[in-house]
Length: 347
Ligand SMILES: Cc1cc2ncn([C@H]3O[C@H](COP(=O)(O)O)[C@@H](O)[C@H]3O)c2cc1C
Ligand SMILES: O=C(O)c1cccnc1
Image (cartoon, rainbow, N blue to C red; front, side):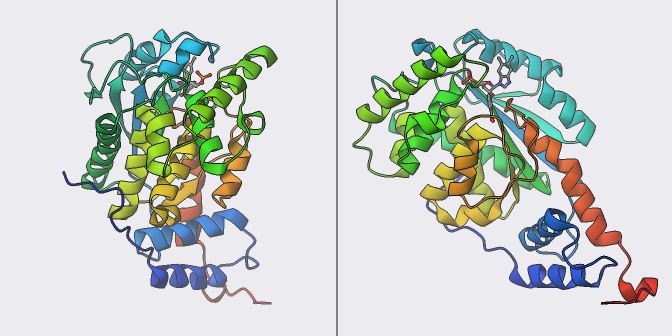
């Protein structure tokens, strides 16, 4: 499969957007009364190129990978959890497993590398790169070939989603210590301080957060000479974060709407948009997570998230939780009576 991160992205369909906006004005409600649900239906119409968007078929890819920076004691949980959770995904016991079943979504897990390898498992695609990234306090997390393979793995998931006629793509991640990688990536891309973006992740206490900030400060100093967003992603990202970025870029190139999950997925989205600005219109943002830096990341992307539920899980769970709401937005848009049909007087 050919994949060029700098290749052109599709443009949303302006005609479908205008038709959907005009249709919203005909429905039996004051204009704008359904708020963000109207905006979501109109945005999906533009992205799907039809006046009546649908979200029946959801494709979820969860990318799993370990991080060398876990050696700096930046997570409340041991690194073995990443591989253990891959098995849990395969057995259908993770949060995203439950949500995917309930949504009738396709769920695939892509294993890019974990320190403990659960071996081949049903429903788990092996796109093995290495056991883990390098500790980015000391060296670039990935070399150029590893970065390319991770981006490519994401683009391949997107190609499967596209071939499966998905109506939208959800990317999830699993990787102990990846809130540290996402924080470092976000700080470098936004020129922000670790104090304002580093949060508790899986549940660090104040001393743990201070340690995480210091680790990110060291990483930013070590990689201050990064040349562009792709270089920053390779130096400070993770295999699963790069795969998410690759999937988002490929989604925009193929014209498939994306529902972005939490802090880590949004950091990957920021990297994708900085690498290829044509990605931005294809991203819908599900929620603002409890992780400290998420709101700043959303602001930087000029994004309005649908939900704020105090979620801090990842796996694509927040994006999955937003799907029923987006389905309702599509139903309202498609099935409400117009003023004329219902014989209701206009303003
Ligand atoms: C059992 C378990 C399941 C998870 N599912 C997602 N995460 C989330 O927590 C991790 C990031 O937090 P940190 O940077 O603090 O390690 C990622 O794996 C993320 O997906 C989980 C974490 C745990 C412990
Ligand atoms: O918002 C997220 O994606 C998140 C936050 C904490 C831990 N894992 C994921």
